[in-house]
Length: 412
Ligand SMILES: [Zn+2]
Image (cartoon, rainbow, N blue to C red; front, side):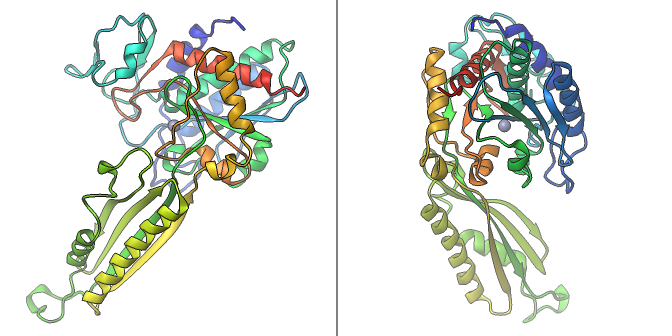
């Protein structure tokens, strides 16, 4: 397996990154933005062009395809997401290739003053001589997750061009709306039809991740009593004041994202909206363990009860909803997919690393829904912002690991 994929990966990423396919949390349809379908249609066309079977764009906006088996074995799924993060400007992405990185700082044509350096991104220090792709300074790059898309398309093209390479049936899925937590439609596990799968949505070379956060979301609705402020004495109950009180009843010196890392979870207030009559506070709760998640929910509920006790004329309603669960709960019962990916890395001379993801992937939901789905590296760095970058050679390493994995999945 000495094929050189650099040129193909670079061309694909540059082409895909220039297409705006940002998702939008406020969009109610599926996919959340119609521009994601531009990517979906393009990929469907390209998949047909390289000879993939069963090419389909589902009505929830996912592109599915098959690389037919050339040998016996389990059906292995591979996923990447076509949407880019709503967190930063993603319109008019102009990818720039910085050839043979020399260890210096990288500057951006459209943002004088912006620099990518080893201080900002120490991982860059290991990439001397690599071809680095960035955006031009005013947008994100969208290597998250178009690098994953480029890697899987390159793998598929390579395998379809040479049926003498032994691998079991592979199912590809390019999904919308991962960045807004809606990447896994309830029909996806059945439509994918894989025994196990991998998302190509990780960072540094060697990452094989099988732990994500367990996640809940909470909405607290405070209803006060509205009154004309000129005649409000003894009547007005200001929901905004109660919202501020609630914030002060919650921990601010611990258990918040800005003060936690590693395996610590948090309770994060990310939005307050409202008027004196009514206010709404939105939280996310995160922990690697269910009892830790439960404890954070209990803390929020207790604070709401304490607040309600101070003002009987107000109502304080707290609703907590499950979002996704740590995929480790399922994967640790059968580590086969994880071990296969780790062995594929080793076979390529890459040391596998498994660190818990302080977030979720499409694989978190898929695993919970019955398709074990660890996450594999792509090389993407400094994602969701103007400094986002990726090494073409890192993408090539990911492509080789996926090909190796497909070969190792062959039965017997
Ligand atoms: Zn991603």
